[in-house]
Amino acid sequence: MSDRTLRGKVAIVGIGETTYYKHSQAPESEFKMALQAILAACTDAGINAHEIDGFASYGDDRNDSVRLATALGLPRLRTSVMQWGGGGGGCCAAVANGAAAIATGQADCVVVFRSLAQGQFGRFGQSAASGSVTGERSYLVPYGVISPPQRFAMRVMRYMHEHGVRQEALRAIAMASYHHAQNNPRAVMYGKPLSEERYDASRWIVEPFHLFDCCMENDGAAALILMDAERAKELQQKPVYLLGAASGASERFASHAHNSPHYASADFTTVAKDLYRMARISPGDVGVVQSYENFTGGVVMALAEHGFFAPEEANEFVTLENLSAASGRLPLNTSGGNLAECYMHGFELVLEAVRQVRGVSSNQVRRNDVALVIGGPMVAPASNLLLGSQAVL
Image (cartoon, rainbow, N blue to C red; front, side):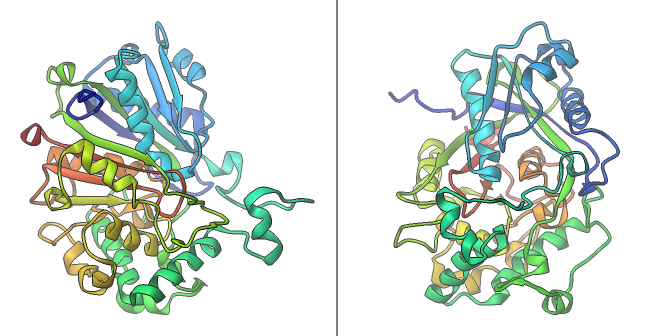
């Protein structure tokens, strides 16, 4: 039973992405951008695309694996995995699913990817008129709660009330993302800095979320390539190893109607414990974090649930100084994240974690041997991922 782990067995050997665009402005189709990102990842890894024999994705990605395999001219397809549910909360789980296929001999080279073209398929997550509503949404839609910021604002407001978290903590999350984006030419918000005054003056979307507390909407694609640890050592890039991965939800947790006393949660109270157990490390070993920011309040909650501070300590811990590379106490979202680099359903965060461990980020941190990725705070199932260098195996 001690062998039931991904730790050190699989490595990320290549990463690739397209240009990131404002929503509905991509000049290419969603499928073509997926292919472009995959081929860029192959080039980064120094492999021929014909080595690929598996695909993994999440969020109901529309780019069918068989069609991708045909377009790439693959001699065979051995595995095809889609993470079920959770939307962007599956960005880390998709990597884990691909790694599990390799670790169990079901594939040798798996591509994990996400592609979005909203001009082709419509605004991401946009509500549509309907004559009826069922399930969890029937507890919300009749009362006017129809959008993600409305749902998640209630959860964050409850958390802020219970633990005395101030608006400044949410602002610091946004400021850190925009601060890092100014050094990242790939970022959509590159050259568009955010000041405290601009944040404070921005319109409310729904309290406690200002405009800059909410993720962007973007088009583009991102991909990475997984191989077993031994093969990874033969390739041109420094291997970035999976130390641990976890996904799931706490008891009775739900993204919509949540019938549980523990409502003010990012859904990592159990998932974080599973992650650290597999990786055999503690929060103090983590040098940099990439956290999905659907909304900034969820990041505060997720960081606390991953053990970096107690909820009552959020105001003191979550500051721009502490969250900034290179020497902050816990550098956060060092490419700009969902708020300022791109909203590729969170997958760009995994690529930035790889860059940090490699030592090539545009906002490189000093402690880069262990990088944490947090996928989808406040959704279910959520997921997370710990990546590391050879030094920590």
